Image 1 (spheres, one colour):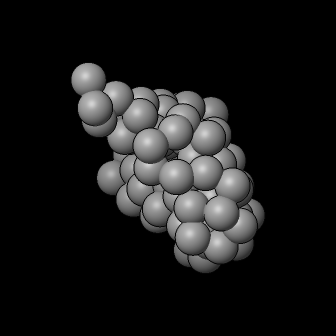
Image 2 (tube, helix red, strand yellow; image 1 turned 45 degrees about the horizontal axis):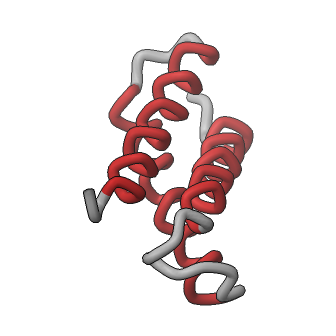
Length: 83
């Protein structure tokens, strides 16, 4: 399966968004999944383009993208406006 790493990253990002939504008690899965997706893209960009620690042929970029997703979710809940 040639795209298993991409599927694993997306499923991991959705799982992180779901956990973040459940742990904060909010009802905004759409917002958390959007933030998680942006974090996945940022983590991929750092791993593949900036630091060049991996390529799309290896699985090294997947943990980087999941860490990027987690960092973005933490920042989202820390710095978002609470009205």
